[in-house]
Image (tube, rainbow, N blue to C red; front, side, top):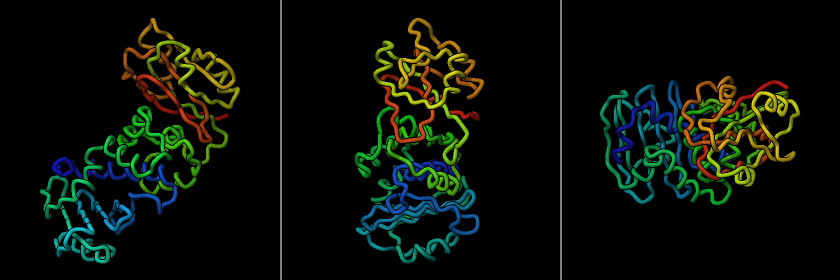
Length: 313
């Protein structure tokens, strides 16, 4: 339980927003989400709402750098809650109807946490405090086979926790059948999360870039699904980035097992900025074009996502 209460208010806010984004990807329909973000709870207030489908609920209120948490569990005894700084939150709706069995609050980012302990608190709050791995385990159990939570996909979840601008490629790496882009764009705007080409992208080509370690060109061809739709995109990369194509469906960008780090990265940096953090043993750069329809990036080995960029047709 201590892990949650050691995090700053800004960090907890970002983690709650990241979880809301992941839920929006997992379930475009609001009713199917366990966590959602309300940016207009009251003047200057935002709330993460959690529900487990069994009657338990969680509300986390953010007021500038102050916070309050209301937890209701069907199995716990109702307690009376009247902390003065958050009286409107705890005594108003919907908390008054939902009920309260556990509660915490702190005034200011550095303020002490006040409230009452509960055995249910770790189950709700650890998901926020522990980050990627806790969310992945929890979401896999809840959403079953609708998501693609492989090792490569877990890297995308980490990027979302880091507030990396969300791209369609990232979404499809998590949810291969996702297609409700307009709804997701609206969700991201409401949550306050940066988007990188989620909405209408007519007239643009998008390219995402990855690096990885592969034992051979055959292994890279077998485990990397590539999609492209534009002759212009091909010509740009053929001339400037030394891409070779296996056939019209698969591509491999730079395979060089004898040379590390990868050559020609200055071209990538011209789009993405500093990418000096690539592991020194990576021997391949992979370009994925225009994942505008459900598809999956399948990769084997250690894979690092560099980023995405768009250019006009």
